[in-house]
Image (cartoon, rainbow, N blue to C red):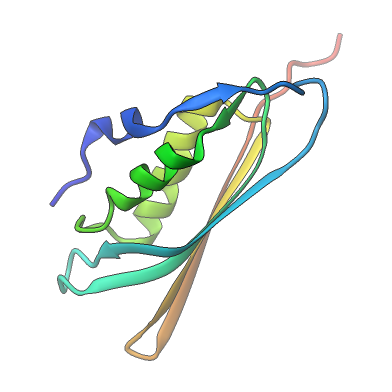
Length: 125
């Protein structure tokens, strides 16, 4: 089953009251599930989102609903990690973000995928 294009629409944000300060937000979802598109078997993992906000922060209930939308979706580890990063960057425009997906062992192999984004800064001058 392909990932719907409008999944990003689930995500809600709110105004960062401290955009002048560089601080980080870490969100951990230890019960993430998706489905292997090859075998149809469930994949279980922990998604960790670490970011430095700019003008917007992600609202947690909407993030929970967004992550739960992957529950029955066939998607590879690498794709889901990058898709989550792209969707969050798309709604937040953070200064910096890292998404790490740490999946439980399957067939004696564990997999951890990390994807990063850094906002481009305007050249000095």
